[in-house]
Image 1: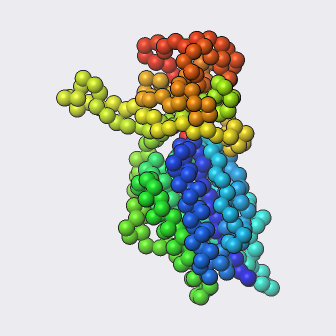
Image 2 (image 1 turned 180 degrees about the vertical axis):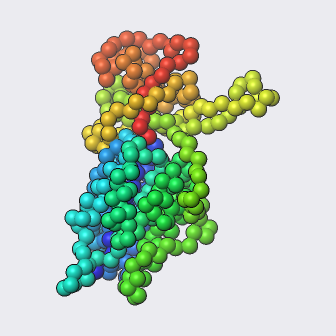
Amino acid sequence: MRRLPIYFLIDVSESMAGEPIQQVQDGMRSIVQELRTDPYALETAFISVIVFAGKAKSLSPLTELYKFYPPTFPIGGGTSLGAALNYLMDDMDKTLVKTTLDKKGDWKPIIFLFTDGTPTDDPTSAFARWNQNYKRSANIVAISIGDNVNTQLLGQVSDNVLRLNTTDEASFKAFFKWVTASIKATSVSVTDMGDDSVQLAPTTGINLEKVDTSKPCLVDENFAVLLGKCSNTKKTYLVKYAKRIAGIEGLEELGIKGIDYKLVGAYPVDEETYNSLSEGKSNRNINTMSLRGVPTCPCCGNQLGVVVCECGNIMCSDGNTSSCPWCGMEGSLGEIAEGGMNITRGRG
């Protein structure tokens, strides 16, 4: 049997924390459930899931559809697209069956790349390796989740770059139905016609558009994420803020606007997994004056989920004397001086 390898190369950087990663989790489940009802897909499709943040990791090796179960998606720090692409190529070298004089190998694999941010590494050498050795024998479908992706950059490795313009629950569901329909159409094509070029389903009625990668794109970071640690449980969590542009109090009549970041939520993460997917500590800062809203701690319920220790790290507090879970310093809470203070933000 000739396999149709389908790779999901999924960005699990900090900005995906919360609803986006849950939507991907649910979407992968719906893809598998739907594909298992399709005889063409059952006959040919093999699925692999590779995730990447600061580092890349396989969550599921290439597995026959009826044996495949969607994994649980972790979160890490960074968006190392070059590392992800190199990991994918190494995996393809080890896993795919090549055509020989004696037998035909796997069909041309499809790679669905999902990302919501700009690379935090330099993907130049990985792109060159892909274009020289893999591009003709594989199909990458690159999906920008939201508008914070350099689509021109993705156009260097893919002729199919699309943008999911809205990321609410309904849009994600429609998007994953489109992915499922595209896999089904390709399965029919390889089975009935022997054509292994990717067959993308129509995007009519979906907030999904094909991007002209020859045109310049404006890349603007939409989220700021902080790494915190619970004072009681010592467990780690992420606090996510969304950028917003709004009028400045007292200057509304002049039409002058400013940028700040509004609280989205706080989410516990497994520290060991997070660190295994992260590439060092971020060197980027954000001023506390730019942050709007304080969450409760998602690990213990303390009312103050963003308290800044003198060591510069984030912890939670019940409002009384606290001991920093990062450095061990004990003290009582005070107010940040006028002008705020710069604190380390995640790599994105």
